[in-house]
Length: 171
Image 1 (cartoon, rainbow, N blue to C red):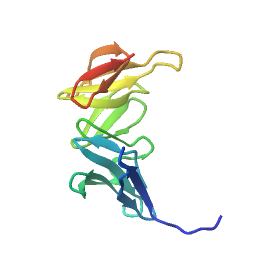
Image 2: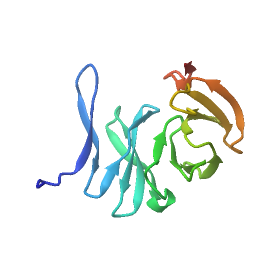
Image 3: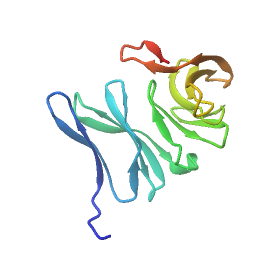
Image 4: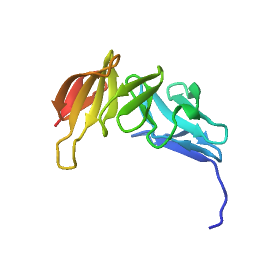
């Protein structure tokens, strides 16, 4: 299938005024992760497979400025399949093997988890993971120590962080 190889870009439309911004572009060989909204900024992971780097980009719509928060070698991630940017605070993780979540940025640490646990957020030294043991089971939240990975508590439902900092459980 022929065509023109145009750079990829992300487009955001502000509601309700309809203002359109496109703060991130990717050239050939680059790919974006899902955007994350954190501390009033739009943040995104951009992988550059040709250069072998991944960049965490942040756009502040209040001042229309985009900058690179971090540039890391792609080899740190191993497989990019489960590479994920999470908010509160902004954290880059990758699934490493069957039972490990590897934190890549802003600090590097391996946390032993069960298969299927996905980091939702961090609150100080507490990591909140979502987990569903089977497709028929209800979702739960597993709270682990950020230092040791030990389970501190389990809760039915998924924790959700509100814009004002409150945590609510969606059951």
